Length: 137
Image 1 (cartoon, rainbow, N blue to C red):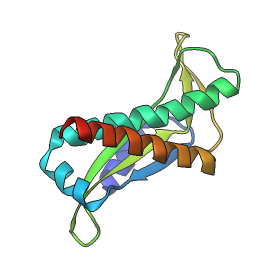
Image 2 (cartoon, rainbow, N blue to C red; image 1 turned 120 degrees about the horizontal axis):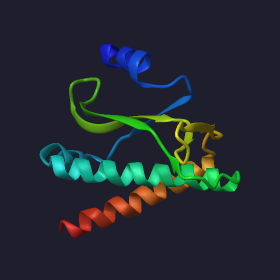
Image 3 (cartoon, rainbow, N blue to C red; image 1 turned 90 degrees about the vertical axis):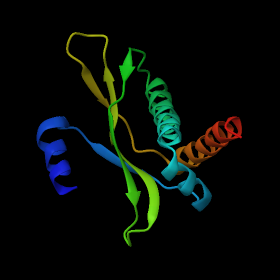
């Protein structure tokens, strides 16, 4: 993990603020995710769309209306600290959005998420992940 972190800092991330988001799951879902890579992928997609939605909503409130893009790197960790089965997501988000309408993208830093936005994110994720699981039976 330390080699990956060094690579990301030295070669991938621009020199802008980065926010770590860690998403863990209830035990029954952990077991299902551990057996089903497709489900992991679907939950990751749901999570990225939900968090990106918060970023875009913030940008709109700040008057930014360009074609805005986000940047995120995710590592799916499969075990907890005591080598227990615990699939969870470690996400590193660039803490803002890029205006992709120009030849050279311009970065727009966004304020940190508020407690209310985090509550909204958790509620959105709960609803969307449950809907996904219900479709699977």
